[in-house]
Length: 184
Image (cartoon, rainbow, N blue to C red; front, side, top):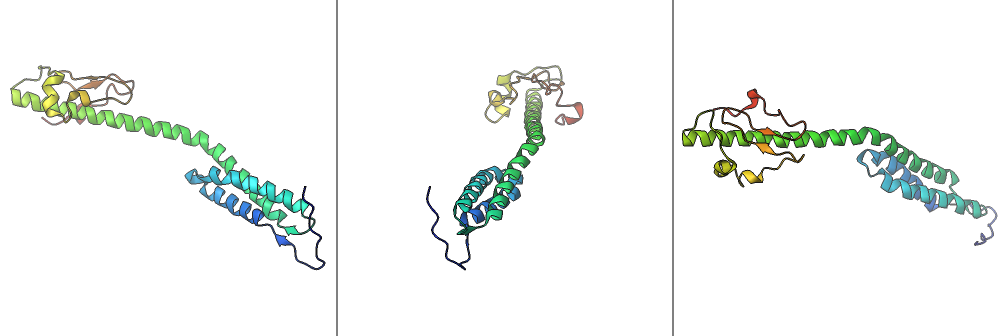
């Protein structure tokens, strides 16, 4: 490749800027791994570290900073390893959070249906055994009954005024307990 320029006797070797860049990126990658930005910095840290190390080896003593370059690519690798170790912990937690959010959204919808049924029964003089239709509840629901969609692809059953509404999605069947009904 390129031959190194002859070294000047007594001259201090210049520290490789690429080695310093690698170390800075590697440290930032480790620190920012928690917010998932680490890999975006780890990969350049590894590339810069290996490139700087190779340039330092070829410089014939004109460049210094081999330790910085090594530390840079090692911290880059550590950041990637941390991400790989965190994935088995993070993925189940993301799935659990999504399922909880879906259950809470469905519970809110069931409460709205229950409230709409109570309003319908009150305004129309219906008793506990009366079963309203979706079109009966449309005027009590913003956007109409058809706007209710379960995120787990379940369907809503209105049931009688005295019964809780239900969702057919797995895990959503009994979300609305008697103590959670809308007061009459």
